[in-house]
Length: 275
Image 1: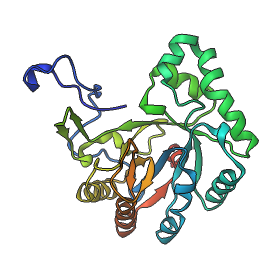
Image 2 (image 1 turned 120 degrees about the vertical axis):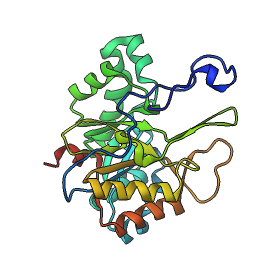
Image 3 (image 1 turned 90 degrees about the vertical axis):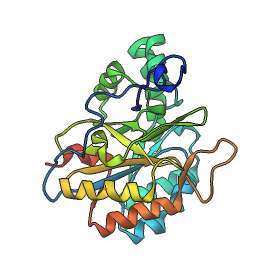
Image 4 (image 1 turned 45 degrees about the vertical axis):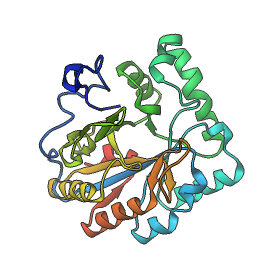
């Protein structure tokens, strides 16, 4: 997961270093350059909100949009959910993998090494997905937790796209630590350079404004890149009782603006394949 590290003396003595560090290349003034005419958007969704995602089909169809659905805990898939996922796949969407137990990959790796990690988080879930008729080639890190060792194992397992998490604003104990314009977050723009490890901007409730996402979409169009975004559960009001997800009206605004700017819709596994 990518977000900013802030020293304690910058916040009147708050102890320690707050939040996760970003790499030097994560933020920059404007997105990088990609390919002329390739400007687009790659939307993905995480976890196991299959029925709720399925109900978004009319919205996707309205804008001829496609997305990637990263499934976790596939051992709990029932026949109805499998049928819904197959229909989504038939309509051009991608079915990706989000882990068997949705645990912290680095901790599993430290505890059991590559073999233990594969046997706990990767192989069981893939068996269930294969049995259901899905062969995912893209993987979303649970909780954005991973390192180079985890990535190397996943790539060796045959995944072609590994998706991480990027956050544009952060709060700590009610204080706004930062709010960074997504159009300046270079890591959430794919430049069609064959890169397999990518970051997507979280668009869950109160993370990004419609104005910010419109600016980010325009940035992708002008620079020939693909803006990568993701969310969790579709919501129709402010989240309560620990629920987390995106407002469906916000997703509609994203799709409407992408269509207005004539962006292409990419699935996550398509990005490294664009030449």
